[in-house]
Length: 178
Image 1 (cartoon, one colour):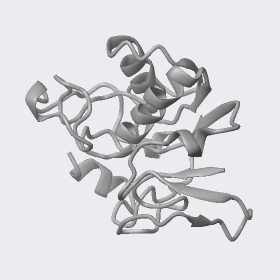
Image 2: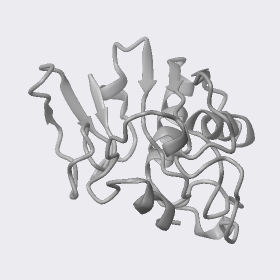
Image 3: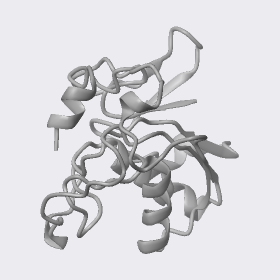
């Protein structure tokens, strides 16, 4: 099965994500954006592991980190392994900026209390942070990147930019987002 974040499996939707069948693979797509933001027991039934492969953009209100956190939260009590494929923070891992999130304002667009707007972390680092600090205790494995440096921006990686969402079309957009 596939689990879809806010902008769909291919990052092209700009509305609620429907549960449907993927035309490329024939697999069921479970929506984690819309009426359901967490994987349900029925969605997770029969799985041994979940692989999270999402490109964050370095701002606390980009919803992919919360989707990943909710996956960790639902996988933990079911003893499902979670593998997070780490990806570069496109706006670098050095600069941290903006006010911390007030604990009373946590939501789908602000998961972790105290997190600044520009957080400087990768998805793998976020997964480890959430798992430890929120005491989720999921069976988490982060598949590390090779050759990434904290001071590297996405254009330093040599990787091809793939839009993670319809309006995040390049590094300039990611830079301006926070």
